[in-house]
Image (cartoon, rainbow, N blue to C red; front, side, top):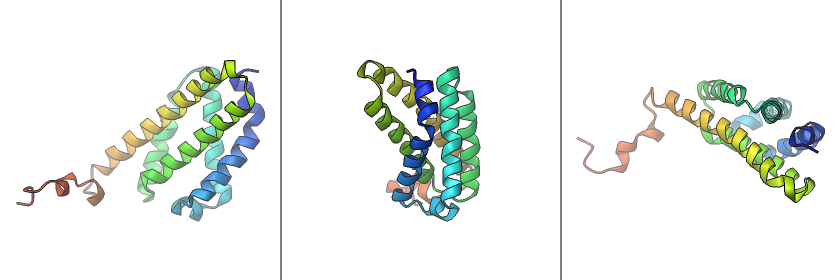
Length: 151
């Protein structure tokens, strides 16, 4: 079975496990959004991941990550919460790959999933931080780490 088929057939199980894992992470804004919204967000990302496996094109994943970064930044959601959601989905997919795919297929499958979600996480972080650095954000005020910059 190829990775695309594997993800399509396992989509609901992957999604259920990812939703459960995000719930266990107790992410403030995700908990406020509710289970249905969490499921939809993760399903959107999983769908993009499945498409990227099939098409070998990262553009939609990166575009989605940029949009998510903007939306979450403007909504006051901490970057770590969004990164955690990406990490949870990646971990669930990896665990399923390791449990169900033959060892001879695991390396490529893990590499593809890691590349796809890694590119999303990278784009997400870059966009979020570019938005954060346009306004003074105390958590990003690195001058506070060095003495002699007060004056």
